[in-house]
Image 1: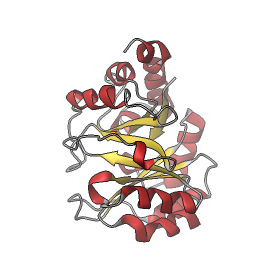
Image 2 (image 1 turned 180 degrees about the vertical axis):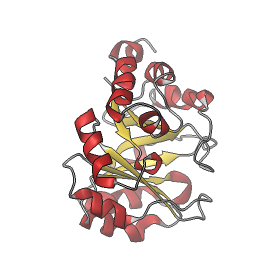
Image 3 (image 1 turned 90 degrees about the vertical axis):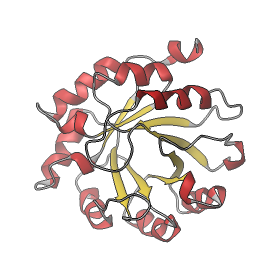
Image 4 (image 1 turned 180 degrees about the horizontal axis):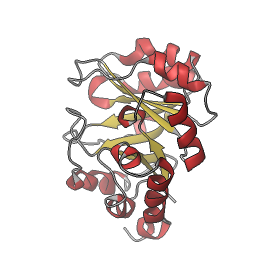
Length: 224
Protein backbone atom coordinates (compact mmCIF):
# COMPACT_ATOMS: atom_id res chain seq x y z
CA UNK A 1 0.00 0.00 0.00
CA UNK A 2 1.21 3.52 -0.79
CA UNK A 3 2.25 5.46 2.29
CA UNK A 4 0.60 8.81 3.02
CA UNK A 5 2.30 11.97 4.28
CA UNK A 6 -0.27 14.75 4.90
CA UNK A 7 1.04 18.23 4.16
CA UNK A 8 0.55 20.55 7.12
CA UNK A 9 0.69 23.68 4.98
CA UNK A 10 -2.85 22.87 3.76
CA UNK A 11 -4.22 22.25 7.23
CA UNK A 12 -6.10 24.56 9.61
CA UNK A 13 -3.28 25.83 11.83
CA UNK A 14 -5.37 27.53 14.52
CA UNK A 15 -5.25 24.36 16.61
CA UNK A 16 -2.08 22.59 15.51
CA UNK A 17 -2.14 20.07 18.33
CA UNK A 18 -5.64 18.83 17.44
CA UNK A 19 -4.70 18.59 13.78
CA UNK A 20 -1.57 16.53 14.54
CA UNK A 21 -3.52 14.19 16.82
CA UNK A 22 -6.18 13.73 14.11
CA UNK A 23 -3.50 12.78 11.58
CA UNK A 24 -1.93 10.36 14.04
CA UNK A 25 -5.25 8.70 14.84
CA UNK A 26 -6.34 8.78 11.19
CA UNK A 27 -3.52 6.54 10.00
CA UNK A 28 -0.98 8.93 8.47
CA UNK A 29 2.46 7.38 7.90
CA UNK A 30 4.38 10.62 8.39
CA UNK A 31 3.73 14.37 8.45
CA UNK A 32 5.01 16.66 5.70
CA UNK A 33 6.23 20.24 6.12
CA UNK A 34 7.18 22.65 3.33
CA UNK A 35 9.70 25.39 4.07
CA UNK A 36 9.93 28.10 1.39
CA UNK A 37 12.26 31.07 1.05
CA UNK A 38 10.16 33.36 -1.16
CA UNK A 39 12.90 33.22 -3.80
CA UNK A 40 13.17 29.69 -5.13
CA UNK A 41 9.37 29.69 -5.05
CA UNK A 42 7.28 32.89 -4.70
CA UNK A 43 5.79 31.76 -1.40
CA UNK A 44 6.64 31.82 2.27
CA UNK A 45 4.50 29.58 4.46
CA UNK A 46 5.85 27.56 7.38
CA UNK A 47 9.06 27.87 9.37
CA UNK A 48 11.05 25.78 11.80
CA UNK A 49 9.15 27.05 14.86
CA UNK A 50 5.92 25.30 13.87
CA UNK A 51 7.82 22.06 13.21
CA UNK A 52 9.48 22.25 16.61
CA UNK A 53 6.14 22.89 18.33
CA UNK A 54 4.50 20.01 16.48
CA UNK A 55 7.27 17.56 17.38
CA UNK A 56 5.99 17.18 20.95
CA UNK A 57 2.50 16.17 19.76
CA UNK A 58 3.35 12.92 17.94
CA UNK A 59 5.94 10.23 17.34
CA UNK A 60 5.15 10.08 13.62
CA UNK A 61 8.15 10.73 11.35
CA UNK A 62 8.52 14.32 10.13
CA UNK A 63 9.27 14.88 6.46
CA UNK A 64 10.55 18.34 5.41
CA UNK A 65 10.61 19.65 1.84
CA UNK A 66 13.04 22.56 1.46
CA UNK A 67 11.82 24.74 -1.38
CA UNK A 68 14.73 27.14 -1.17
CA UNK A 69 18.04 28.15 -2.64
CA UNK A 70 21.19 27.34 -0.64
CA UNK A 71 19.40 25.01 1.80
CA UNK A 72 22.50 23.73 3.59
CA UNK A 73 22.39 26.28 6.42
CA UNK A 74 19.04 25.06 7.79
CA UNK A 75 19.87 21.34 7.88
CA UNK A 76 21.51 21.30 11.36
CA UNK A 77 18.47 23.09 12.80
CA UNK A 78 16.09 20.53 11.29
CA UNK A 79 18.11 17.73 12.87
CA UNK A 80 18.03 19.49 16.23
CA UNK A 81 14.23 19.76 16.28
CA UNK A 82 13.68 16.10 15.42
CA UNK A 83 13.05 15.93 11.67
CA UNK A 84 13.48 12.46 10.13
CA UNK A 85 13.57 13.04 6.36
CA UNK A 86 14.68 16.10 4.37
CA UNK A 87 14.55 16.71 0.64
CA UNK A 88 16.20 19.53 -1.27
CA UNK A 89 15.63 20.59 -4.85
CA UNK A 90 18.04 19.26 -7.44
CA UNK A 91 17.62 22.55 -9.30
CA UNK A 92 18.74 24.53 -6.22
CA UNK A 93 21.88 22.52 -5.37
CA UNK A 94 24.92 22.83 -7.63
CA UNK A 95 26.50 19.89 -5.77
CA UNK A 96 23.54 17.70 -4.79
CA UNK A 97 25.60 14.74 -3.61
CA UNK A 98 27.44 16.95 -1.13
CA UNK A 99 24.13 18.35 0.17
CA UNK A 100 22.66 14.86 0.56
CA UNK A 101 25.77 13.76 2.46
CA UNK A 102 25.36 16.79 4.76
CA UNK A 103 21.77 15.74 5.55
CA UNK A 104 22.79 12.14 6.24
CA UNK A 105 25.67 13.28 8.46
CA UNK A 106 23.05 14.90 10.70
CA UNK A 107 21.20 11.60 11.15
CA UNK A 108 18.35 12.17 8.68
CA UNK A 109 17.28 10.47 5.46
CA UNK A 110 18.03 12.57 2.38
CA UNK A 111 15.98 13.13 -0.76
CA UNK A 112 15.96 15.13 -3.97
CA UNK A 113 12.89 16.99 -5.25
CA UNK A 114 12.09 17.94 -8.85
CA UNK A 115 9.69 20.62 -10.07
CA UNK A 116 7.31 19.60 -12.88
CA UNK A 117 9.50 21.14 -15.58
CA UNK A 118 12.76 19.63 -14.30
CA UNK A 119 13.98 16.38 -15.91
CA UNK A 120 15.28 13.62 -13.66
CA UNK A 121 18.82 12.57 -14.59
CA UNK A 122 20.39 9.22 -13.71
CA UNK A 123 20.95 9.49 -9.97
CA UNK A 124 23.39 6.70 -9.14
CA UNK A 125 26.08 9.30 -8.51
CA UNK A 126 24.05 10.44 -5.48
CA UNK A 127 24.29 7.04 -3.79
CA UNK A 128 24.70 5.96 -1.04
CA UNK A 129 23.18 9.14 0.41
CA UNK A 130 19.95 9.27 -1.61
CA UNK A 131 16.97 7.61 0.13
CA UNK A 132 14.02 9.07 -1.78
CA UNK A 133 13.01 11.22 -4.75
CA UNK A 134 10.09 13.67 -4.69
CA UNK A 135 8.33 14.45 -7.98
CA UNK A 136 6.11 17.54 -7.84
CA UNK A 137 2.87 17.21 -9.76
CA UNK A 138 1.82 20.84 -9.34
CA UNK A 139 3.66 24.07 -10.04
CA UNK A 140 4.67 25.48 -6.63
CA UNK A 141 3.18 28.93 -7.17
CA UNK A 142 -0.12 29.14 -5.33
CA UNK A 143 -1.90 26.92 -2.85
CA UNK A 144 -4.53 25.49 -5.19
CA UNK A 145 -2.56 24.61 -8.33
CA UNK A 146 -4.03 21.80 -10.43
CA UNK A 147 -2.68 18.25 -10.46
CA UNK A 148 -0.58 17.62 -13.60
CA UNK A 149 -0.95 13.93 -14.52
CA UNK A 150 1.48 14.31 -17.44
CA UNK A 151 4.34 14.67 -14.96
CA UNK A 152 3.86 11.05 -13.87
CA UNK A 153 5.66 9.97 -17.03
CA UNK A 154 8.88 11.12 -15.34
CA UNK A 155 8.20 8.69 -12.51
CA UNK A 156 7.58 5.79 -14.89
CA UNK A 157 10.86 6.54 -16.67
CA UNK A 158 12.95 7.15 -13.55
CA UNK A 159 11.81 3.93 -11.87
CA UNK A 160 13.62 2.08 -14.65
CA UNK A 161 17.00 3.66 -13.91
CA UNK A 162 19.57 1.05 -12.91
CA UNK A 163 21.02 0.88 -9.42
CA UNK A 164 18.22 2.70 -7.59
CA UNK A 165 16.37 -0.32 -6.22
CA UNK A 166 16.41 0.94 -2.64
CA UNK A 167 15.25 4.47 -3.44
CA UNK A 168 11.65 5.41 -2.58
CA UNK A 169 9.54 7.47 -4.98
CA UNK A 170 7.27 10.23 -3.69
CA UNK A 171 4.58 12.16 -5.59
CA UNK A 172 3.59 15.56 -4.20
CA UNK A 173 1.02 18.04 -5.42
CA UNK A 174 -2.73 18.26 -5.90
CA UNK A 175 -3.36 14.60 -5.10
CA UNK A 176 -6.82 13.47 -4.03
CA UNK A 177 -8.48 10.05 -3.77
CA UNK A 178 -9.58 10.47 -7.39
CA UNK A 179 -6.01 10.85 -8.70
CA UNK A 180 -4.47 8.11 -6.54
CA UNK A 181 -5.06 5.35 -9.14
CA UNK A 182 -2.89 7.27 -11.65
CA UNK A 183 -0.16 7.79 -9.07
CA UNK A 184 -0.37 4.15 -8.03
CA UNK A 185 -0.05 2.89 -11.60
CA UNK A 186 3.00 5.11 -12.17
CA UNK A 187 4.80 3.39 -9.28
CA UNK A 188 4.80 5.79 -6.33
CA UNK A 189 5.79 4.51 -2.89
CA UNK A 190 4.61 7.64 -1.06
CA UNK A 191 1.96 10.30 -1.59
CA UNK A 192 2.17 13.80 -0.12
CA UNK A 193 -1.39 15.14 0.05
CA UNK A 194 -2.66 18.46 1.34
CA UNK A 195 -6.10 19.52 0.15
CA UNK A 196 -7.02 15.87 -0.35
CA UNK A 197 -6.56 15.27 3.38
CA UNK A 198 -8.00 18.47 4.85
CA UNK A 199 -10.95 19.15 2.54
CA UNK A 200 -14.62 18.42 3.50
CA UNK A 201 -15.17 15.55 5.82
CA UNK A 202 -12.91 14.37 8.56
CA UNK A 203 -9.17 13.85 8.27
CA UNK A 204 -9.59 10.16 9.04
CA UNK A 205 -12.23 9.72 6.32
CA UNK A 206 -10.05 11.39 3.71
CA UNK A 207 -7.01 9.31 4.63
CA UNK A 208 -9.08 6.14 4.41
CA UNK A 209 -10.40 7.14 0.97
CA UNK A 210 -6.85 7.55 -0.29
CA UNK A 211 -5.77 4.28 1.32
CA UNK A 212 -8.70 2.50 -0.32
CA UNK A 213 -7.51 3.68 -3.74
CA UNK A 214 -3.84 2.85 -3.18
CA UNK A 215 -3.87 -0.92 -2.65
CA UNK A 216 -0.87 -3.03 -3.67
CA UNK A 217 1.43 -1.40 -6.24
CA UNK A 218 3.78 -4.37 -6.74
CA UNK A 219 1.93 -5.84 -9.72
CA UNK A 220 1.77 -2.53 -11.60
CA UNK A 221 5.50 -1.94 -11.12
CA UNK A 222 6.52 -5.44 -12.19
CA UNK A 223 4.42 -5.16 -15.33
CA UNK A 224 5.69 -1.69 -16.28
